[in-house]
Image 1 (tube, protein in one colour):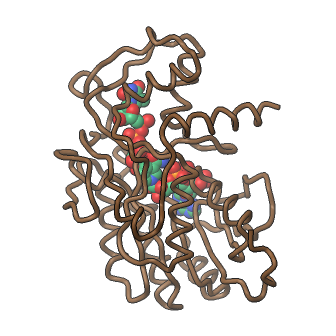
Image 2: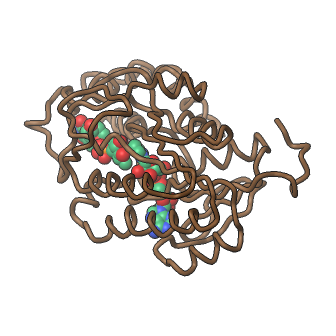
Length: 311
Ligand SMILES: NC(=O)C1=CN([C@@H]2O[C@H](COP(=O)(O)OP(=O)(O)OC[C@H]3O[C@@H](n4cnc5c(N)ncnc54)[C@H](OP(=O)(O)O)[C@@H]3O)[C@@H](O)[C@H]2O)C=CC1
Ligand SMILES: Cc1cn([C@H]2C[C@H](O)[C@@H](COP(=O)(O)OP(=O)(O)O[C@H]3O[C@@H](C)C(=O)[C@@H](O)[C@H]3O)O2)c(=O)[nH]c1=O
């Protein structure tokens, strides 16, 4: 808790995607720590419950507005988490996906470069083919869906910036936040089983599922340390969605018989998913001191948040 630095001497941190799952966790942790003056941007109205930061309503596809905002604020650090993240919608609406994930990132990155800000880009395991895993930072990208292609293209433009940059890649993020525009695997499994609904869950895709709070903590470590380069920031347990579903059912004492084991040849989605991903996080551990929760501990944290949200 470092709130006794007068606001004027604090470094300014600007983040995007404030209303999203990662964004809400970033704002909450940054406000709690008090080290940065926080400027949180989102599309449309602010959907965050608490204060302690400046909200900026900004559509990142409005290039002039983005340039004006960044030149006006002149932040020291930018964490860019905003994206079109619904993978199947990205496959079916590729122009919208390109505008959100590549063009908007380029506009913001160039604005960061113009003021010499430290630019932190949040990326994904979906830049990889899924032929092999788990993966370290030097693995070669080969995306198998359009969402992954756009995130790979965005990474490339970030790597060419002439301002300090970092890329925080993550995997299958889960958590609970206010008024989210999409669900995530833990909430989806829990909700389905509580409703007595049978679910088909693949057992041949491998991930290192990541608690949203841990991803936020990893991004903040990069910001605080002024770290540059690529970091894999994810959970540390390699699991299939089927194993995750069983773990969720076990924790919440729900009916495991409703979880039907399947595989990617039978269960298909509009966008192909890479089979084997998951990250090796030793670099983030060593250079940042990053340490994620176990999946079980993370579910416990979520469970408490759900109870709190209901009270
Ligand atoms: N969730 C996951 O499993 C994973 C996510 N990631 C990456 O992490 C980052 C954060 O993901 P997550 O928090 O789950 O995503 P969310 O979908 O929860 O949040 C993304 C946010 O970006 C905002 N956004 C989208 N387009 C624009 C735009 N044109 N202008 C302004 N804001 C925009 C959305 O606004 P609105 O609320 O109005 O829709 C939303 O609040 C993303 O970059 C994603 O690619 C990487 C790996 C896994
Ligand atoms: C809906 C569903 C998913 N699954 C599996 C497929 C997949 O491996 C896992 C999650 O599927 P979803 O479609 O919910 O999530 P998905 O779109 O795969 O999540 C991705 O989001 C983007 C933003 C990322 O960057 C990726 O890292 C990844 O987290 O669960 C099933 O087995 N059965 C189902 O009915």
